[in-house]
Length: 238
Image (cartoon, rainbow, N blue to C red; front, side, top):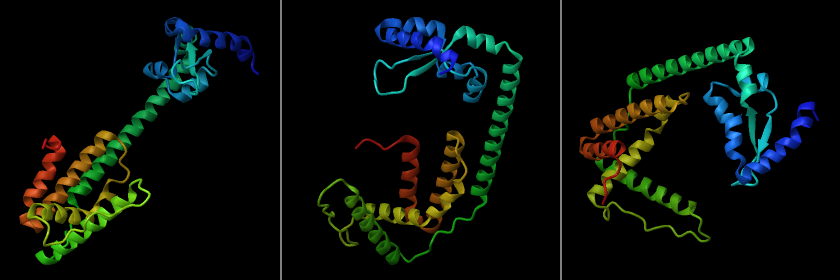
């Protein structure tokens, strides 16, 4: 056990117990959590390097089994922030963050450029063949969903047929089938992790795929447009 742990361990446990009975407000004034340090620009590596072990641990009053919150004395944090070591480490962290941001932006531009230029090869099928494959795909997916449910004896739903399906449902199934055939283009999004950049790339790819389906099968234009509108506005209430 370190000297720091020896001198502070008993106090830390006592303060943690006190926090459950109303000591939280005092700890909030005199100590910072990991989240508080992040808000001040600290990274986990900077905490380990410049602060080391926390000054006290505060038990969670809500979830007893959760790890205790690590708290750092504000005075010690402020002293560290005035040091040359902090300025050097913070500058290095900022450079790494800027480099990572720049690399992510470059990757996003590359992916958007590739999505824009990539030819979308939609399978060209006769109306009868497309309808048959769409119904078959729908039945296969429906059966898979049935067996994925938590049921001791799954019972597949009724099998659809070309004759029993209404035209609107057939259009949905046709687009479902064609979109399934085009899932390989989703690989264009590989390497995109930022929420904003990935959302823009996914939207561009989605629009290109539905535009290609519409070009190959003009009668499916309304269904493709409906799907794009649902993505933008959400499903309309029934």
